[in-house]
Image (cartoon, rainbow, N blue to C red; front, side, top):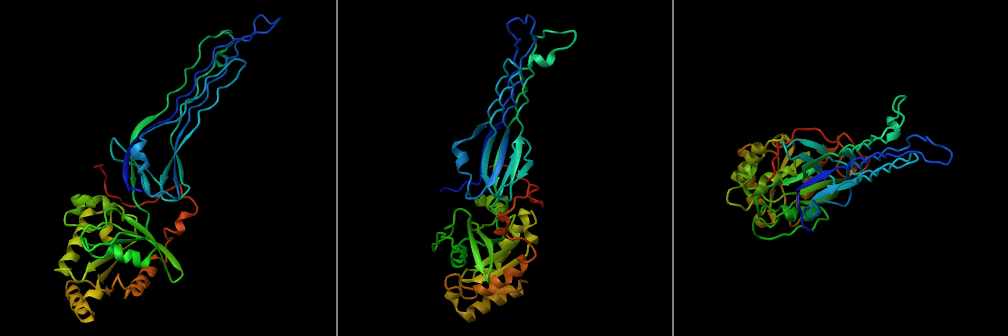
Length: 354
């Protein structure tokens, strides 16, 4: 399945049905009076976060969503049926953003969370409701109130507890395959990962969700390599793991580049708890790994975890350090329970579509 994390759609709630103009006609009743019923209410546009979806690809092919119009009223004081509501199902982590000013209108962070987004128009009044002591046979009726319409952007920001960051070819895909059930593509070349990956880590009777985003490059916060969109997927993470390729040309500079991009992006990414792990220890050996770690400590990085994503060496100690940082809050795995209509508060980076 293709991964798509933003889409523009048109939504319109249903208009109300018109009221009826009708008069009672029965044998031996010459002046039966008005009996036109009211029109039905138009259908609402409702968004609902559901399990089992992790992409917005469906909205690439279906971009217009219109709820049903209310049915007209009828004689004998019969009210028109209400239009059927249209429920638009989105992945957990989806934000609804105004096309006009970029304002975040809704944020769906739990399975089952629902929101009536556009209300259908009320039905028009039938001529029965216009009857007065001076107007015994009214012929006016309401045509029904129009529905609401607007263009919105859907933006998917993955819901994960821990985010993996690092330069291209830092070994993030190998790491997530080692600790989760994900099957991320692995290759000995940069940009093997082209879309975010999610996996569930089970460690010491705890579970949490780990997100791997494609490797960052200098200028990612300004959109280089669409890195700003990738960074958006870790805004919700509470802990970051920064993987550094120990066999790279300049591990210290690699650390500085990623830290600079996190700070430039904003949205409080640079202030999140962060664990730095020196990866690919199986290629260097213990002595060279300690030398590289010493260079990072001189640059102010401490503590540093020495690991090998390929063999798993040092990985349990790294995961042990993650658990206390999640212990006082609900994990994303646990969050897939009761819906929370209030959503998730916090600073987010101002958004504009590509």
